[in-house]
Amino acid sequence: EEVGSRVPRKAEADCLFLGPTCCEGFLPSTAEMSAADEDVAPSADVQDEVDAEDEEEVPASKKAKKTRKDPKTTSFKSGLCFPVARFRKALKDGGYAKRTKVGGAIYLTAVIEYIVAEILELAGNAAKEQKKTRIIPRHIQLAIRNDEELNKYMSNVTIQGGGVIPNIHTVLMPNKAQKGQAAGSFSQEY
Picture (tube, one colour):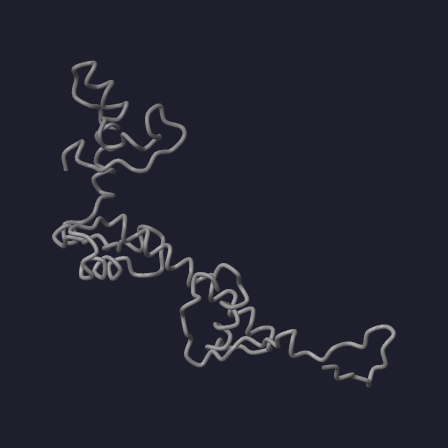
């Protein structure tokens, strides 16, 4: 293997440029440099050092097999759980624009993932209040309708099996007895 064909490693703090091992393989060792400066053949200990490096490398049988790098999805690269590729395909197929960039799909995916996480957190709290371990549509309905921003955002959404929010209008509530009047006497004046 030729000197300088290795890929540099990640940067570390000690190096003048990028790290102590960043130039490893690109630059000759100090022993080789001193031998080159003296215009003499490298000594036996320098040759042993070079041979030891060659022995540590991958054997010929494994060199024949090209190891393929694991493909990383856009979702993985951006740190999202939802599939960015599907959202990008939906953006393309929806005809919202002539061209779409990956950044737009990533942003859309991140926003939708955040909203879903928020709803699921509130629905989980609603399920815990009712001492349930499973989130049902009723819990999602309660979570959305009890949160001011989510209720405004999803005001036109109907959740199947969600039911309604328990609410009794104040007009329908029985009047409390006022001071000076008997509790049971209601006059009917026309």
